[in-house]
Amino acid sequence: MKHIFLRRATMEDVMLIYEWANDKGRRQNSFQSNPIPLEDHMCWYKNKMQWETTLFYILMNGEQPVGQIRLELEED
Image (cartoon, rainbow, N blue to C red; front, side, top):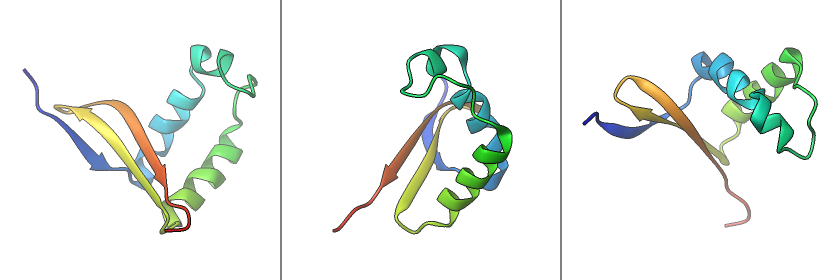
């Protein structure tokens, strides 16, 4: 069995998150079904990485990224 753990997301994960966000099934089940333009995603991701109120993690199964968790802290 592989080791499952969370690691902090970094700017190096931008394309991984972009691919996951634009997954066909995910887009079909989203409020906005159109693909996300790369420029928009890059701007959004860069901003999220700078916000102290956002905790962004990648779920790892050994060396394989398998999911994401994003927490946004609001008012205490």
